Structures are given as C-alpha cells and as structure tokens.
Image (cartoon, rainbow, N blue to C red; front, side, top):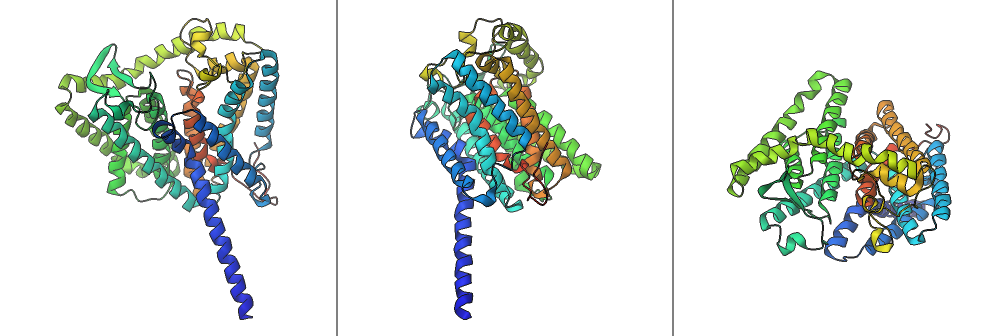
Length: 457
C-alpha cells in the first residue's frame, strides 16, 4: 500500500511539474510579440524574426489541438468561426482575382490570423484563474518600466545618439511639435520599438490592462502602485502620441463609470490615484525645464490639447475625403490581402496612400482593408470584430468568471477604442501590438464544459 501511495504521489508531482512548464510556456507566448520586437530591434535586425515568431505560435497552437481537454477550437463561439471562415474564403477568392505574390498574401494573412491564434492560446492560460491574471499583470508592469526607462534614456542622450537610432531605418523617430513649432529638447522616441507609432499604441494597450486590473479587482492600491500610475501618464507624454493620450482619457472615464455602476460613488474615492498621476506628471515635466525652456513646457501641453481639433482634421483627411473614391474603385474586389499591409513593402507590397490615387491621405485601417479585400471583405472583418466586442462586454456584464473580469473589461475597452482609432491611423496593420493585445484579452473566452454548454453569441 505504501508503494502504491508513493507511486501516486510521484505521478502527481510529475503532472504538476509538467503543468508548471506548460503554464510558463503559455505565459512566454503571451509576451512573445513584444519579445520579438525587442529581438528585431537589438539583436536580429530582419523582419524574418516575425516569421520565426509565427512558426513558434502556430506549432504551440497545433500542440494544444492535440490535447483534447483544452478544447481550444470550441472556446470560440460558432458565429465568430463562421465569420472568420467567410472572411478568409473571400480573401482567397480575392487573391485569385488579384493574382499577386503569395508571399504578400501570407503576410496579410498573418496580420489577420496571428492575433486570433494568440487569443485562443492565451485563453488556455487564463483558465487558471486569478493567479494567471495577476502574473500577466506583473509582466505588463515590467514592460512598462522597461519601455519608459528606455524612452527617457533616449530623450536624455539625444536624437542622434547611437543608442537612440540603433535598429531603426530611415524613419521611426518623430518630431515633438505643435503646428510646426518644435518643442525644444524633445522628440518622439521609439523606446524598445522600431517606430514611435508602435510606442504609443503599445503604451495604450499596456496601461489600459494595468488600470483595468486596478478597477476590476479588490486589490489594495498601495502607494507604489499609485506612483506607477503617474509614471504611466509620464510615459505617454514622453512618447508624444496624442491619440494614445486621448483614448487613455476616454477609457479612464469608462472605467470610472464602470466602477461607480458596480460599487457606488464611494468606490471612486481612489480617484486620488488619477489626481496623483497628474501631480507626478506636472512635477516630472517641470524638472525638464533644466533641458527645455518654460515656453517649451507650455508647448508640451499645447501638443496634447491640440488633439481636440487635430483628430477631426485627421478624420477628414484620412477617412472622409478618400472613402468614396476607394469604395467606388474596390467595391467588390481589392488588390489582394497583404498588398498594403505594413511590412509587405520589402516583398512586393506598397503603401496604400502612395499607391492608390485618392483625395486626402488615406492613412486608415479601413481604407487599407477596402483596397486589399474590397468592401465585402472589410464588412466581414468588421462583423468579426463586433462579435468579439459583444462577447467581451457580455462577459463583463455576466461576470461568469469574476477572476477574468479585468481581462474582459480590458479587451472590450481596448477593441472599441482601437476600432475608433483605426479611422485616423492604420493601427490594425501593426501586427505586433494587435497580437499582444489579443494575447492579453484571451480570458474573454469563457470556457464551459458540455454540461454547461459552450459560449455562443
């Protein structure tokens, strides 16, 4: 009997060790998009690193398919699968008509497909419950510290310093300006990314997840977390990304409304967090006066305030002016999936606003998609996004698994924000940040056993 008991104990210990390795690997997969970006910039400066990332993710996905109890495909509602299959079927038909390079097609396919793969894989990790969410929360904070520290160091070293320009092409760093007036001593750095635009989009994603965790859990917000929120706002200011600032403000309003609706007005007493954030922001930027003049400090605030009128101008130039021309030209079929996707230029692709003759600029995710797969394909993709958005908010409202509530809240607010952001920038073309956000949002997929029934729309 003792031998049997020892054998069972050994078996359980081995299973726990195996599970531990599996969970660590899934956490690695969740962080893989940003890890690949860092490797791309500092170690292996070729876009082929992202093909390697795709292979790792797909192999992991196939391995999970072989584990019956994960039911990884069944975790996604049938209605969404139908829309996904319809979109890719249409994209394939469109590719036959367009007759473009298959390599470019697969780049476009990866931009659309990989985020969903991360989504499904991370759902397996989030099934562990509250502990899994907390570990991801810690990872998010580590990334924020690294990103802010790198961005600040680049500012201090200067725009032309080798550390600042390392791993970048001819573009990447941006001017820190307001209506043509450059802010003295500042520029828009790239931090750990290869473009300043990625810097802003990644910051919005990371900060939103962190703040959703604060709002949706019973976690005691200690003083160091409150200070860290001030540093989060500072990171956005350092990036110079106005859109990230605007959507972070709007998202904060939604999170506070959510907190009040759940717990009452007294729950927003921790608004001190936000007040402290603003205070820290003002103090830290004021210290910059040793580098920049007081007039430059005013320009920093003017830059972010200018988003009030700059966003409508961008909406007109990037969407309203070109949309009718692009719709008329690509009503049914487009030039082919991936042709105008970011990263495809080196393989035969192009930039949509340079290749397509249209009024305005056309730097817009929806304009790009219409030009690639036509209006029909774009509508199918939008249907999938709206179904995911509905799933996220339904998950928040139902509170089926409260430990994943921060994840569902994050994904719903992030996806809604990014769909609006896509009207002024091609944010969905940025596969790295999109894949990472989908990886953070996998807990939305509330898995149920057969006796409970699968989640459906």
